[in-house]
Image (cartoon, rainbow, N blue to C red; front, side):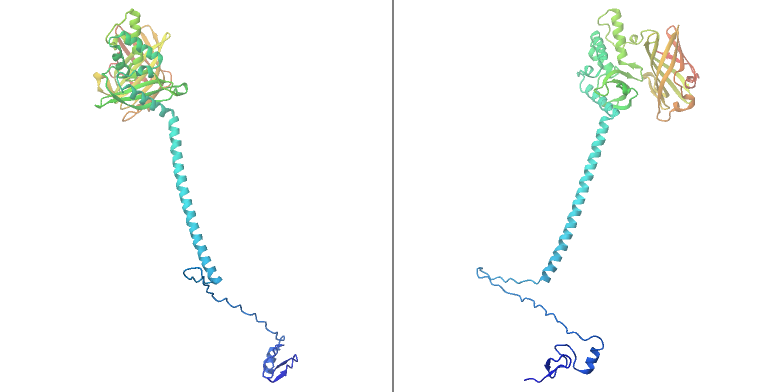
Length: 416
Protein backbone atom coordinates (compact mmCIF):
# COMPACT_ATOMS: atom_id res chain seq x y z
CA UNK A 1 0.00 0.00 0.00
CA UNK A 2 1.28 3.37 -1.07
CA UNK A 3 2.25 5.89 1.58
CA UNK A 4 -0.25 8.75 1.91
CA UNK A 5 -0.50 11.97 3.66
CA UNK A 6 -3.08 14.58 4.36
CA UNK A 7 -3.17 17.85 2.36
CA UNK A 8 -2.26 20.65 4.71
CA UNK A 9 -4.87 22.89 2.97
CA UNK A 10 -7.99 20.71 2.62
CA UNK A 11 -7.18 17.70 4.79
CA UNK A 12 -7.83 15.13 2.04
CA UNK A 13 -5.69 11.99 1.74
CA UNK A 14 -3.20 12.31 -1.06
CA UNK A 15 -0.06 10.38 -2.08
CA UNK A 16 2.99 11.04 0.03
CA UNK A 17 5.05 11.95 -2.99
CA UNK A 18 2.38 14.32 -4.43
CA UNK A 19 3.55 17.82 -5.10
CA UNK A 20 0.04 19.22 -5.70
CA UNK A 21 -3.29 18.32 -4.07
CA UNK A 22 -5.60 16.73 -6.47
CA UNK A 23 -8.57 17.95 -4.53
CA UNK A 24 -7.97 21.62 -3.78
CA UNK A 25 -5.27 22.28 -6.33
CA UNK A 26 -2.79 23.75 -3.89
CA UNK A 27 0.88 23.23 -4.45
CA UNK A 28 2.52 21.42 -1.60
CA UNK A 29 6.00 22.78 -2.40
CA UNK A 30 6.27 25.95 -0.33
CA UNK A 31 8.11 28.10 -2.95
CA UNK A 32 5.72 27.17 -5.77
CA UNK A 33 2.68 27.58 -3.60
CA UNK A 34 3.88 31.01 -2.46
CA UNK A 35 3.93 32.16 -6.10
CA UNK A 36 0.50 30.63 -6.79
CA UNK A 37 -1.10 32.12 -3.71
CA UNK A 38 0.11 35.71 -4.06
CA UNK A 39 -3.13 36.43 -5.85
CA UNK A 40 -6.25 34.38 -5.66
CA UNK A 41 -6.21 30.74 -4.78
CA UNK A 42 -5.54 28.53 -7.71
CA UNK A 43 -8.76 26.95 -8.91
CA UNK A 44 -8.93 23.40 -10.02
CA UNK A 45 -8.66 23.17 -13.83
CA UNK A 46 -11.44 21.47 -15.69
CA UNK A 47 -10.19 19.62 -18.74
CA UNK A 48 -12.74 18.83 -21.43
CA UNK A 49 -12.24 15.39 -22.81
CA UNK A 50 -11.36 15.34 -26.57
CA UNK A 51 -13.80 13.50 -28.80
CA UNK A 52 -12.35 10.63 -30.60
CA UNK A 53 -12.80 10.58 -34.41
CA UNK A 54 -14.84 7.61 -35.40
CA UNK A 55 -12.55 5.21 -37.20
CA UNK A 56 -13.13 4.43 -40.84
CA UNK A 57 -15.40 1.44 -41.13
CA UNK A 58 -15.25 -1.03 -43.91
CA UNK A 59 -18.62 -2.43 -44.85
CA UNK A 60 -18.78 -5.48 -46.99
CA UNK A 61 -21.96 -6.16 -48.87
CA UNK A 62 -22.53 -9.91 -49.30
CA UNK A 63 -25.32 -9.56 -51.90
CA UNK A 64 -23.00 -7.96 -54.53
CA UNK A 65 -20.79 -9.91 -56.85
CA UNK A 66 -17.95 -7.52 -56.15
CA UNK A 67 -17.22 -6.19 -52.73
CA UNK A 68 -17.34 -2.44 -52.50
CA UNK A 69 -15.80 -0.53 -49.72
CA UNK A 70 -17.75 2.48 -48.46
CA UNK A 71 -15.54 4.87 -46.61
CA UNK A 72 -17.17 7.34 -44.27
CA UNK A 73 -15.90 10.80 -45.23
CA UNK A 74 -15.01 13.18 -42.39
CA UNK A 75 -17.29 16.23 -42.19
CA UNK A 76 -14.37 18.62 -42.79
CA UNK A 77 -13.64 17.02 -46.18
CA UNK A 78 -17.33 17.06 -47.13
CA UNK A 79 -17.49 20.74 -46.23
CA UNK A 80 -14.42 21.45 -48.33
CA UNK A 81 -15.88 19.70 -51.38
CA UNK A 82 -19.19 21.48 -50.83
CA UNK A 83 -17.42 24.84 -50.83
CA UNK A 84 -15.59 23.96 -54.04
CA UNK A 85 -18.86 22.90 -55.68
CA UNK A 86 -20.53 26.15 -54.55
CA UNK A 87 -17.76 28.21 -56.16
CA UNK A 88 -18.10 26.26 -59.40
CA UNK A 89 -21.89 26.71 -59.40
CA UNK A 90 -21.51 30.42 -58.68
CA UNK A 91 -19.07 30.89 -61.58
CA UNK A 92 -21.36 28.94 -63.93
CA UNK A 93 -24.30 31.08 -62.80
CA UNK A 94 -22.41 34.30 -63.54
CA UNK A 95 -21.39 33.03 -67.00
CA UNK A 96 -24.97 31.96 -67.78
CA UNK A 97 -26.34 35.33 -66.65
CA UNK A 98 -23.79 37.14 -68.81
CA UNK A 99 -24.75 35.03 -71.82
CA UNK A 100 -28.45 35.70 -71.27
CA UNK A 101 -27.84 39.44 -70.95
CA UNK A 102 -25.73 39.43 -74.15
CA UNK A 103 -28.33 37.48 -76.10
CA UNK A 104 -31.07 39.75 -74.81
CA UNK A 105 -29.10 42.82 -75.86
CA UNK A 106 -28.50 41.46 -79.35
CA UNK A 107 -32.13 40.48 -79.79
CA UNK A 108 -33.29 43.80 -78.43
CA UNK A 109 -30.90 45.71 -80.65
CA UNK A 110 -31.99 43.72 -83.67
CA UNK A 111 -35.61 44.34 -82.75
CA UNK A 112 -34.82 48.01 -82.36
CA UNK A 113 -33.18 48.14 -85.80
CA UNK A 114 -36.12 46.30 -87.33
CA UNK A 115 -38.50 48.64 -85.58
CA UNK A 116 -36.64 51.68 -86.92
CA UNK A 117 -36.65 50.24 -90.45
CA UNK A 118 -40.37 49.55 -90.24
CA UNK A 119 -41.03 53.01 -88.89
CA UNK A 120 -38.94 54.59 -91.66
CA UNK A 121 -40.78 52.52 -94.27
CA UNK A 122 -44.10 53.65 -92.80
CA UNK A 123 -42.99 57.29 -92.98
CA UNK A 124 -41.91 56.84 -96.61
CA UNK A 125 -45.21 55.20 -97.50
CA UNK A 126 -47.19 58.08 -96.01
CA UNK A 127 -44.90 60.87 -97.29
CA UNK A 128 -46.89 62.59 -100.08
CA UNK A 129 -43.88 63.26 -102.31
CA UNK A 130 -42.80 59.61 -102.13
CA UNK A 131 -46.34 58.41 -102.87
CA UNK A 132 -46.66 60.70 -105.90
CA UNK A 133 -43.25 59.69 -107.26
CA UNK A 134 -44.18 56.00 -107.00
CA UNK A 135 -47.56 56.53 -108.65
CA UNK A 136 -46.14 58.55 -111.56
CA UNK A 137 -43.40 55.97 -112.19
CA UNK A 138 -46.03 53.20 -112.11
CA UNK A 139 -48.21 55.10 -114.62
CA UNK A 140 -45.37 55.43 -117.14
CA UNK A 141 -44.31 51.82 -116.64
CA UNK A 142 -47.85 50.76 -117.55
CA UNK A 143 -48.12 53.20 -120.48
CA UNK A 144 -44.93 51.93 -122.15
CA UNK A 145 -45.54 48.26 -121.35
CA UNK A 146 -47.42 47.99 -124.66
CA UNK A 147 -48.61 50.47 -127.32
CA UNK A 148 -51.98 48.70 -127.20
CA UNK A 149 -52.44 49.29 -123.47
CA UNK A 150 -55.55 51.36 -122.82
CA UNK A 151 -53.90 53.53 -120.18
CA UNK A 152 -55.83 56.66 -121.13
CA UNK A 153 -59.00 55.39 -119.45
CA UNK A 154 -57.07 54.44 -116.31
CA UNK A 155 -54.92 57.50 -115.76
CA UNK A 156 -56.52 60.53 -117.43
CA UNK A 157 -59.29 62.52 -115.74
CA UNK A 158 -62.74 61.94 -117.21
CA UNK A 159 -62.66 65.33 -119.00
CA UNK A 160 -59.22 64.62 -120.48
CA UNK A 161 -60.23 61.09 -121.52
CA UNK A 162 -63.50 62.21 -123.15
CA UNK A 163 -61.59 64.75 -125.25
CA UNK A 164 -59.16 62.02 -126.26
CA UNK A 165 -62.03 59.74 -127.36
CA UNK A 166 -63.66 62.54 -129.42
CA UNK A 167 -60.39 63.50 -131.11
CA UNK A 168 -59.54 59.84 -131.73
CA UNK A 169 -62.85 59.29 -133.49
CA UNK A 170 -62.36 62.43 -135.62
CA UNK A 171 -58.89 61.48 -136.85
CA UNK A 172 -57.57 58.90 -139.29
CA UNK A 173 -55.63 56.37 -137.21
CA UNK A 174 -56.69 58.55 -134.29
CA UNK A 175 -55.78 56.15 -131.49
CA UNK A 176 -52.15 55.81 -132.56
CA UNK A 177 -51.79 59.50 -133.42
CA UNK A 178 -53.25 60.88 -130.20
CA UNK A 179 -51.50 58.36 -127.95
CA UNK A 180 -48.19 59.66 -129.34
CA UNK A 181 -49.26 63.26 -128.81
CA UNK A 182 -50.36 62.63 -125.24
CA UNK A 183 -47.45 60.51 -124.02
CA UNK A 184 -44.55 61.39 -126.40
CA UNK A 185 -45.23 64.94 -127.65
CA UNK A 186 -46.02 63.53 -131.09
CA UNK A 187 -42.76 61.57 -131.48
CA UNK A 188 -42.65 57.99 -132.74
CA UNK A 189 -43.82 55.41 -130.24
CA UNK A 190 -41.06 53.60 -128.36
CA UNK A 191 -40.43 52.25 -124.90
CA UNK A 192 -39.33 54.92 -122.44
CA UNK A 193 -38.21 54.92 -118.83
CA UNK A 194 -39.39 57.72 -116.54
CA UNK A 195 -37.45 59.58 -113.88
CA UNK A 196 -39.35 61.97 -111.62
CA UNK A 197 -37.09 64.99 -111.11
CA UNK A 198 -39.41 67.24 -109.09
CA UNK A 199 -42.71 67.14 -107.21
CA UNK A 200 -44.68 70.31 -106.46
CA UNK A 201 -47.04 69.99 -103.47
CA UNK A 202 -48.27 73.60 -103.51
CA UNK A 203 -51.87 72.45 -103.98
CA UNK A 204 -51.57 69.17 -102.09
CA UNK A 205 -54.19 70.16 -99.44
CA UNK A 206 -56.63 70.49 -102.37
CA UNK A 207 -55.70 66.94 -103.46
CA UNK A 208 -53.71 68.29 -106.42
CA UNK A 209 -50.02 68.32 -107.26
CA UNK A 210 -47.63 68.31 -110.20
CA UNK A 211 -44.62 66.21 -111.11
CA UNK A 212 -41.82 66.93 -113.56
CA UNK A 213 -40.49 63.93 -115.44
CA UNK A 214 -37.60 63.12 -117.80
CA UNK A 215 -38.28 60.32 -120.31
CA UNK A 216 -35.39 58.35 -121.83
CA UNK A 217 -35.45 55.57 -124.42
CA UNK A 218 -33.06 52.63 -124.78
CA UNK A 219 -30.79 54.65 -127.08
CA UNK A 220 -30.40 57.45 -124.57
CA UNK A 221 -32.67 59.90 -126.42
CA UNK A 222 -34.69 61.97 -123.97
CA UNK A 223 -37.83 64.04 -123.68
CA UNK A 224 -37.12 66.29 -120.73
CA UNK A 225 -39.23 68.55 -118.55
CA UNK A 226 -42.54 66.77 -119.00
CA UNK A 227 -44.94 68.17 -116.41
CA UNK A 228 -47.91 66.12 -115.19
CA UNK A 229 -50.70 68.02 -113.43
CA UNK A 230 -52.33 65.54 -111.09
CA UNK A 231 -55.58 65.10 -109.17
CA UNK A 232 -56.66 62.54 -106.55
CA UNK A 233 -53.04 62.38 -105.43
CA UNK A 234 -53.98 60.95 -102.02
CA UNK A 235 -55.49 57.90 -103.71
CA UNK A 236 -54.93 56.92 -107.34
CA UNK A 237 -53.39 59.73 -109.39
CA UNK A 238 -55.35 61.05 -112.37
CA UNK A 239 -53.72 63.31 -114.94
CA UNK A 240 -55.59 66.49 -115.83
CA UNK A 241 -52.91 67.88 -118.16
CA UNK A 242 -49.53 66.90 -119.62
CA UNK A 243 -47.26 69.81 -120.50
CA UNK A 244 -44.10 69.69 -122.62
CA UNK A 245 -41.28 72.26 -122.74
CA UNK A 246 -42.72 74.30 -119.87
CA UNK A 247 -46.11 74.79 -121.52
CA UNK A 248 -44.98 75.10 -125.11
CA UNK A 249 -47.23 72.16 -125.96
CA UNK A 250 -50.01 70.87 -123.71
CA UNK A 251 -51.78 67.66 -124.64
CA UNK A 252 -55.24 68.33 -123.19
CA UNK A 253 -55.42 71.86 -124.62
CA UNK A 254 -54.39 70.53 -128.02
CA UNK A 255 -57.28 68.06 -127.78
CA UNK A 256 -59.71 70.84 -126.79
CA UNK A 257 -58.59 72.98 -129.70
CA UNK A 258 -58.82 70.15 -132.20
CA UNK A 259 -62.24 68.98 -131.05
CA UNK A 260 -63.53 72.57 -130.90
CA UNK A 261 -62.39 73.37 -134.43
CA UNK A 262 -63.94 70.21 -135.84
CA UNK A 263 -67.20 70.64 -133.94
CA UNK A 264 -67.54 74.25 -135.18
CA UNK A 265 -67.07 73.15 -138.77
CA UNK A 266 -69.60 70.35 -138.28
CA UNK A 267 -67.22 67.90 -139.87
CA UNK A 268 -66.54 64.33 -138.89
CA UNK A 269 -62.98 63.24 -139.55
CA UNK A 270 -61.17 66.44 -140.55
CA UNK A 271 -57.47 65.75 -140.46
CA UNK A 272 -54.94 62.98 -140.38
CA UNK A 273 -52.61 65.27 -138.41
CA UNK A 274 -53.92 66.13 -134.93
CA UNK A 275 -50.88 68.30 -134.29
CA UNK A 276 -51.99 70.94 -136.80
CA UNK A 277 -50.65 74.39 -135.91
CA UNK A 278 -54.00 76.00 -136.81
CA UNK A 279 -55.51 74.28 -133.79
CA UNK A 280 -53.24 76.08 -131.32
CA UNK A 281 -54.95 79.48 -131.52
CA UNK A 282 -58.65 80.16 -130.88
CA UNK A 283 -58.26 83.97 -130.84
CA UNK A 284 -55.50 86.58 -130.92
CA UNK A 285 -54.00 85.77 -127.55
CA UNK A 286 -55.04 82.30 -126.49
CA UNK A 287 -52.42 79.58 -126.81
CA UNK A 288 -48.62 79.45 -126.71
CA UNK A 289 -46.17 82.28 -127.27
CA UNK A 290 -42.37 82.29 -127.31
CA UNK A 291 -40.65 85.61 -126.61
CA UNK A 292 -37.13 85.23 -127.87
CA UNK A 293 -34.01 87.05 -129.02
CA UNK A 294 -32.91 89.07 -126.00
CA UNK A 295 -29.64 89.15 -124.12
CA UNK A 296 -29.67 89.00 -120.33
CA UNK A 297 -26.39 90.54 -119.20
CA UNK A 298 -24.00 87.63 -119.86
CA UNK A 299 -26.33 85.10 -121.52
CA UNK A 300 -29.43 84.68 -123.68
CA UNK A 301 -32.96 84.65 -122.36
CA UNK A 302 -36.13 82.96 -123.56
CA UNK A 303 -39.75 83.30 -122.41
CA UNK A 304 -42.51 80.77 -122.99
CA UNK A 305 -46.00 82.00 -122.26
CA UNK A 306 -49.28 80.11 -122.34
CA UNK A 307 -52.63 81.92 -122.08
CA UNK A 308 -56.23 80.73 -121.97
CA UNK A 309 -59.53 82.56 -121.82
CA UNK A 310 -60.77 83.54 -118.34
CA UNK A 311 -64.02 85.46 -118.80
CA UNK A 312 -63.15 88.67 -120.64
CA UNK A 313 -59.49 88.33 -119.74
CA UNK A 314 -56.79 85.65 -119.75
CA UNK A 315 -54.78 83.54 -117.32
CA UNK A 316 -51.94 81.11 -117.78
CA UNK A 317 -48.36 80.05 -117.13
CA UNK A 318 -44.96 81.53 -117.85
CA UNK A 319 -41.46 80.06 -117.98
CA UNK A 320 -38.27 82.10 -118.33
CA UNK A 321 -34.88 80.53 -118.92
CA UNK A 322 -31.49 82.22 -118.76
CA UNK A 323 -28.66 80.54 -120.65
CA UNK A 324 -28.02 79.62 -124.30
CA UNK A 325 -29.60 77.64 -127.12
CA UNK A 326 -28.27 74.14 -127.69
CA UNK A 327 -30.29 73.64 -130.87
CA UNK A 328 -32.45 76.63 -131.80
CA UNK A 329 -34.21 74.87 -134.67
CA UNK A 330 -35.39 72.21 -132.22
CA UNK A 331 -36.16 74.75 -129.51
CA UNK A 332 -33.62 73.21 -127.11
CA UNK A 333 -32.40 75.74 -124.58
CA UNK A 334 -29.87 75.22 -121.77
CA UNK A 335 -31.03 77.34 -118.83
CA UNK A 336 -27.68 77.13 -117.01
CA UNK A 337 -28.14 80.53 -115.32
CA UNK A 338 -31.54 79.74 -113.76
CA UNK A 339 -35.23 79.44 -114.56
CA UNK A 340 -38.51 80.98 -113.44
CA UNK A 341 -41.91 79.24 -113.39
CA UNK A 342 -44.95 81.37 -112.65
CA UNK A 343 -48.64 82.12 -112.99
CA UNK A 344 -49.84 85.11 -115.01
CA UNK A 345 -53.02 86.98 -115.82
CA UNK A 346 -53.53 89.25 -118.82
CA UNK A 347 -55.96 91.92 -119.90
CA UNK A 348 -56.64 92.77 -123.55
CA UNK A 349 -57.24 96.30 -124.79
CA UNK A 350 -57.66 96.64 -128.53
CA UNK A 351 -54.62 95.08 -130.18
CA UNK A 352 -52.53 95.15 -126.96
CA UNK A 353 -52.27 92.77 -124.03
CA UNK A 354 -50.93 93.69 -120.57
CA UNK A 355 -49.37 90.66 -118.83
CA UNK A 356 -49.01 90.56 -115.02
CA UNK A 357 -46.90 88.06 -113.06
CA UNK A 358 -49.10 86.80 -110.20
CA UNK A 359 -46.73 84.38 -108.48
CA UNK A 360 -43.59 82.43 -109.29
CA UNK A 361 -40.83 80.09 -108.17
CA UNK A 362 -37.25 79.89 -109.38
CA UNK A 363 -34.72 77.13 -109.88
CA UNK A 364 -30.96 77.07 -110.23
CA UNK A 365 -29.22 76.13 -113.46
CA UNK A 366 -26.00 74.18 -113.66
CA UNK A 367 -23.93 77.29 -112.89
CA UNK A 368 -26.11 79.85 -111.12
CA UNK A 369 -29.57 81.21 -110.36
CA UNK A 370 -29.65 84.87 -111.38
CA UNK A 371 -33.31 85.13 -110.31
CA UNK A 372 -32.18 85.24 -106.69
CA UNK A 373 -30.40 88.54 -107.29
CA UNK A 374 -32.13 91.77 -106.35
CA UNK A 375 -32.28 93.22 -109.86
CA UNK A 376 -33.94 90.04 -111.18
CA UNK A 377 -36.59 89.46 -108.48
CA UNK A 378 -40.26 90.41 -108.78
CA UNK A 379 -42.95 91.48 -106.38
CA UNK A 380 -46.29 89.60 -106.66
CA UNK A 381 -48.65 91.10 -109.25
CA UNK A 382 -45.85 92.89 -111.13
CA UNK A 383 -46.54 93.99 -114.71
CA UNK A 384 -43.97 92.35 -116.98
CA UNK A 385 -45.03 92.68 -120.66
CA UNK A 386 -47.11 94.66 -123.08
CA UNK A 387 -47.65 92.48 -126.17
CA UNK A 388 -48.95 94.12 -129.34
CA UNK A 389 -50.43 92.40 -132.40
CA UNK A 390 -49.64 94.00 -135.75
CA UNK A 391 -51.35 91.94 -138.44
CA UNK A 392 -49.88 88.45 -138.16
CA UNK A 393 -46.89 89.68 -136.16
CA UNK A 394 -46.58 90.02 -132.38
CA UNK A 395 -44.19 92.35 -130.57
CA UNK A 396 -43.34 92.27 -126.86
CA UNK A 397 -42.15 95.18 -124.76
CA UNK A 398 -40.77 94.32 -121.31
CA UNK A 399 -41.91 96.62 -118.48
CA UNK A 400 -40.88 97.03 -114.85
CA UNK A 401 -38.15 94.69 -113.64
CA UNK A 402 -38.61 92.56 -116.73
CA UNK A 403 -36.49 95.17 -118.49
CA UNK A 404 -33.59 93.81 -116.41
CA UNK A 405 -34.25 90.33 -117.77
CA UNK A 406 -34.92 91.26 -121.42
CA UNK A 407 -32.64 94.25 -121.64
CA UNK A 408 -33.52 95.25 -125.19
CA UNK A 409 -30.06 94.92 -126.71
CA UNK A 410 -31.64 93.02 -129.61
CA UNK A 411 -35.03 92.73 -131.26
CA UNK A 412 -37.74 90.90 -129.30
CA UNK A 413 -39.75 88.50 -131.44
CA UNK A 414 -42.92 86.66 -130.49
CA UNK A 415 -43.97 83.43 -132.20
CA UNK A 416 -47.24 81.58 -131.70
